[in-house]
Length: 130
Image (cartoon, rainbow, N blue to C red; front, side, top):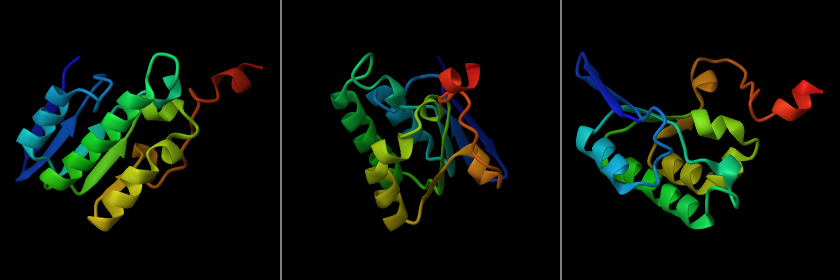
């Protein structure tokens, strides 16, 4: 699992890949150090809440997302990958959406960023297989 920073034309983008972040401090510190304009964030794994992912880890991820917003120049956070496996992901990180709005940071999915409909196929897997 590797985080990647791409810089071009005076802008930076961090892609967190599949690090199940941002519940690990080292992952967040990379983002803060790189100071990106855009972050494509893969997690946390809210769809595993209470099973393989604890409420404590979710709370830490929320605080770390707020830290990224507070301590970087980020203007857009695209929530992807693990988030898209949970139909309730927006509810679970509502605090982040509120905080980001106060700081004029946009939190959105890649589909929404591109003006497309969000199709949460993985989150609806059982229903779609029927």
